[in-house]
Length: 168
Image 1 (cartoon, one colour):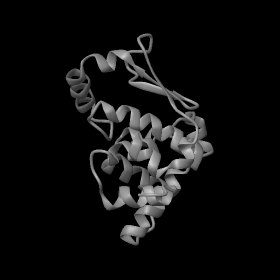
Image 2 (cartoon, rainbow, N blue to C red; image 1 turned 90 degrees about the horizontal axis):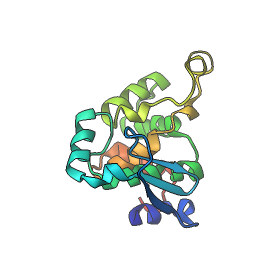
Image 3 (tube, rainbow, N blue to C red; image 1 turned 180 degrees about the vertical axis):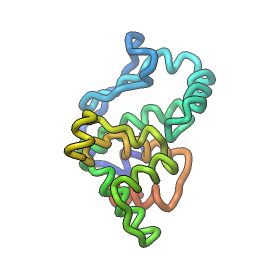
């Protein structure tokens, strides 16, 4: 998290609480509420099994256990710098490839190049169909930040720069 604190200092002005819980649903690796990150204790008990399960699922942008916390810290960054994943992704893509993409096309790009989980939509089906809301894509920034710990691409670097990281 030190690297994230340097890149996004506004998000980390106040201390972050990190804890573990053995009462979380077995399907959840962690959760963030405000400035508190709670990690599922069962996910940490056997690193090899957890990492193997993450890779098998194939929906996350990361494969290392420690990046679960980076992903969760990404929610804190989003809450401070703004839930603007779709807009930032479209602009980052344009800045690199000089091609404008629709919302649907950038979602496909993110699913293929970041992770399937980055395209998780937190709104209702009706909300998606009738009132498409790009702010309901709340996993884009956390997934990109977690992926950046394992891989750097021009798209990831540009996205982080646009997000407002002070030292990208």
